[in-house]
View 1 (tube, helix red, strand yellow):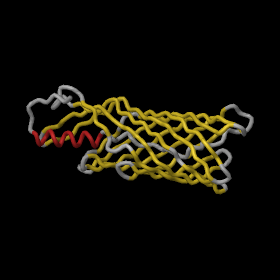
View 2 (tube, one colour):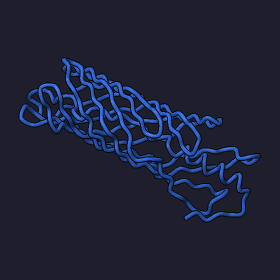
View 3 (cartoon, one colour):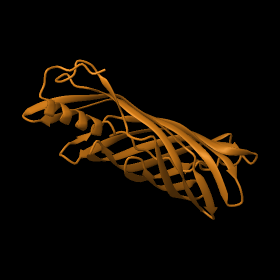
View 4 (cartoon, one colour):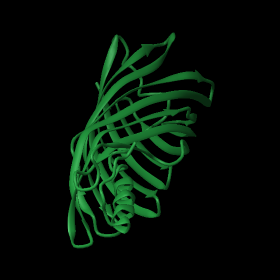
Length: 241
């Protein structure tokens, strides 16, 4: 529950709207297909290293913002001829944010982890699942409200995504798409207006995504588009060895 000091109500409304827009800055990462790169023959597990970029657009309470994020992907692929492949992974990156009314800033480090696996593979079609989460410890910046500069702190920012991609194989290409279920939240605090913190949740909980993977023996290139509160997209290049 918010505990408010005596303030100008117009400033309060503007602060809340800007805070909600800023809460989404860290919420973008690659989902990918449910089937990871194959485990190399004769190995219990194959390391999978990659680099990715994701661009996100989002709408929060009538405000639009854009985020650029780069990250490193570190995973391990398991499986053999009798067991569907699955991957455990983590990602470390950073982000920058631009808001349509002039906010421009860089974010703290972002941390993510997840698992993806193949449930079924036919001659051409198959399907799988992806479960991943992301966390940012804190993010601080200042916003000009009238003639006053207000310091905002976003703390314990996190999200969880659960996806069930369907895919189709055509030689070295793999097309995928599916539904996306997500929950994202952040704690927002400002000493200028609030005596304690409040939780802010991203709008909606269901989205969709799709993409294309070009996969060689040890190299994979993923290109993806996603829709949550607005469109986003990115790409990841990974190497299995």
